[in-house]
Length: 320
Image (cartoon, rainbow, N blue to C red):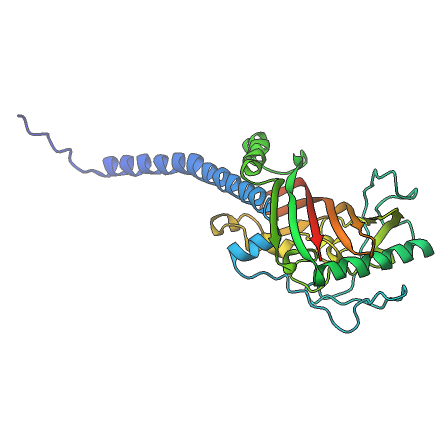
């Protein structure tokens, strides 16, 4: 077998080899890095969708510590005879009750939207709200609570205005559907610890005031509370967090996989069209509680602005 002739190394051949290597590197950068960015974006989007379909308690149990360490201090509202005082939440650092846009289609409420422009509750609404707060707080402290069903569902999916690579936009709906296939709204039927009942990881179920609601109505033994909207960035310290299990921006950022965390620098959440419907027994105790609200996640980062529209509902039965 003839021995392969060795090509002598010359400045010209060395320059050609270097040029060839540089072309390979250019081709690699043109294909690999965009592909990596897309893969990481897909991973980020999927992780956000998957995160959305957990209840906040599941995130705490599976993902470690959470910042949701709300505590009640002496100046939180106490509802006896309709009186109330200021509320301080150590989780959000203030008693802020921001208002937002949006509307509610509940025909049972007064002619107003959820934006916070409807003014304070009327005297009758104040009485209903007081009755609701007393009853739901008693349910949390004294009742045996069964989580009947609940979860999060797609409510429009990926917003068309999201700034994402074209491929991500085209498969965004499929990613959300995939996340819902193993999560979403499900029947449960398990007895839960009171700490998982709204408001989660606190010793109260409601600290709503007249400034937090659009309406509070009572028909027979059913009380319906419609809350004001919290726009993107307001849900952490907003109206709905005083009576519902809202997922907060910090929780989302803490649970983004490390491989995709470099893409996201900030998260925002909203909570809109919130409604709580409770059924009372003859003694004025809550025996059934239904919660629902729409919410969005917005993730911001380098060349990234993704908004996902979701909706959550939770249904409970309480025995004494």
